[in-house]
Amino acid sequence: MPPTNTPPPPTPTATPVPKLRIGLLDAGELAFGTNLAELLDASAKEFAALNALPYTALAAPDVTAALGLRIAAGDNVIVLAGDGKGAAVAAAATAHADVTFIYFGQPAPAGTENLIVLGAEGFAPDEMGFLAGLAAGAGSRSEVVAAVVSLLNVPGRAYDSGFVNGMRVACSRCKYIQIDTRIYAGRDVQQALLIRLYEDERVDTIWAAPGAGGDWLLEGCAQQGCRVVTNGKPPPVLKPAVAAVVELRPDVPLKAILAALWEGRAPVLPVLLNAASGALQLQPVGAGAALTAADVGVVMDFANRLASGELSTGIDPATGLPF
Image (cartoon, rainbow, N blue to C red; front, side, top):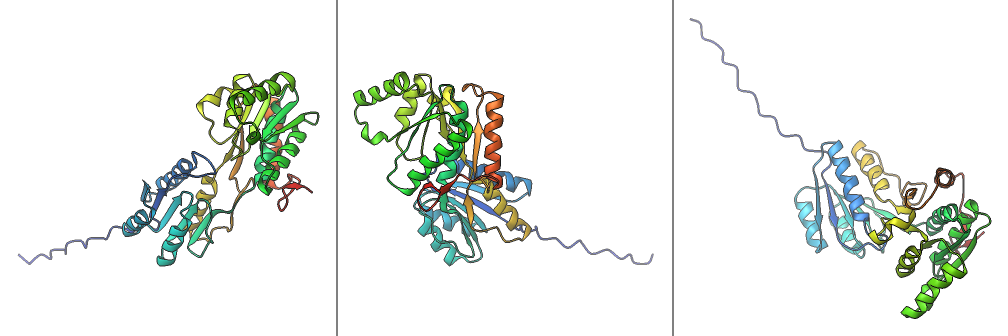
């Protein structure tokens, strides 16, 4: 018999190296809100699953060590969320030019070619106030609304002015009461304020600007039957009274950045946390707050026009006051 030619064994093929290997580090407190790291995690996890990419999320009490761990593991995109960690992520970006770092926290470091900062200039307080004012004005039945806000700095004045302008759009007849809770110290004084707002002023809808310290007032007003507009996920004690939620959504621009990196495009920079980028959204809640379908329609029409650029808050960002 003629000899048979035995075919050579197949050459083993190397396992394809993923184009992106994503890691997310939760480094703790974010002044912008309580559930923002969760939103970033969910967004990155969904993107990785959709594109069959490796993804790891870790708590990072020691940021420098955690960054080193993920870099050694081969991550080439690292998302870091946590206030006060800008110096650590900037140092890592300088030392590892082949890794893209995405940072969300305050104070924000300067962005570089491989360090992308979500909201390097903060977010738009006038727009947050405007959206809250829209919801408060639309939801008020007594046509008297209140906001807890300090006027001592530009962001505080922008919250206040934006709120008033948004309220006027939704309710031109509404009366506005501005409250600075720092002057109401002590249980008796606080209780007197609650009684005045509810019985004398007839306030039925209230909002507190971020950092204004109005949690006790929101809870007290809610117990008296007021509707409440919250910033981000409401605590359980306020849920039955919530009329609307003004949400900061850094996960929206994060997903756009990941998509650009995946497709080999340059991400759009700077990353602004505002209505136009989708990072600032209004979510009306109709059930427990007695917002009618018409209320929701009015609110969302103006919120969408703000996001599209068709509508402006009318506030000067340099002063926090109306133009």
